[in-house]
Length: 364
Ligand SMILES: Cc1ncc(COP(=O)(O)O)c(C=O)c1O
Image (cartoon, rainbow, N blue to C red; front, side, top):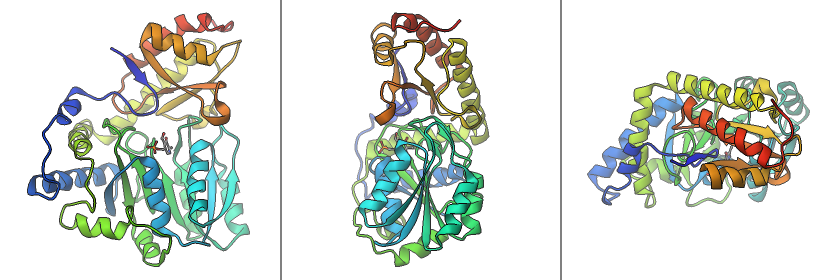
């Protein structure tokens, strides 16, 4: 079997695949309503929120746009805490819709420094919201969101969180950490196919929403809420993805969030230990290394592109490359959703064979 180990989409359990073969149903009918109600309830448990949770048909980036346009007005000042490609994307969306973005960038591979966030908030009282990435997929780093959140809330600002590749796999109690809008995507740790962004909305976010003037139509939370009251979505949803998610969420609740988080921690450790045993350096600062994706720095003459090709063609192991300025400099092992330590052992064994063929001259 192919080992698809990119940081989403992920392989899917057969029960989930099966759910996607179901015949279409009326998305304004009773059956869909029951499924949507069940999915919403399960998501609230896994987000650990009593706030609203909406299913938006679109990819994660759509969810990020929804977070911005539903809570902000053109001219609002936002602090963008960015540690990689996806932090930059979140800021770019805000800028595109007319927010004044104050960038607070950290070296790629490192987590955000909480004191620097505090200083930035002290320096500019006009800041209305803070944009932050929970788990930066491009560098394999998880931010200390609990600490960032407590600083953001010291200053009473809105906290908009890109948790696309972390939520459901890495601890993120949405209410306890006062996240105002939290965004994730079905193709990440949720063992479901792409097609849905899932977003939570706090009371504070609703207050901001009532004054927010950025243009919006498709992503409008008011519409999402009014339709959810009758267990519908405003627009035709990705029905097959909802079927799949309904089953994968059942599986997740059976396993238990605590156990899922522990499994991701174990699998990530196996990935990091395995990489180190090959003599390759981790790209991310290990004290903040992600439990859903491991970024590995190229070293010892390794041609990462050639290595990815050998893995794909000769071992049926699919890993991720580096994005943007990390292209050719790192590769990434995704380990989120439906994944065990055995899967990672397979990846490491394949790497052991492929590395010397791709020019690597280091290691044990
Ligand atoms: C942290 C993060 N943010 C945003 C995105 C964008 O999500 P999508 O590709 O679903 O639009 C991704 C996808 O990899 C991600 O990992």
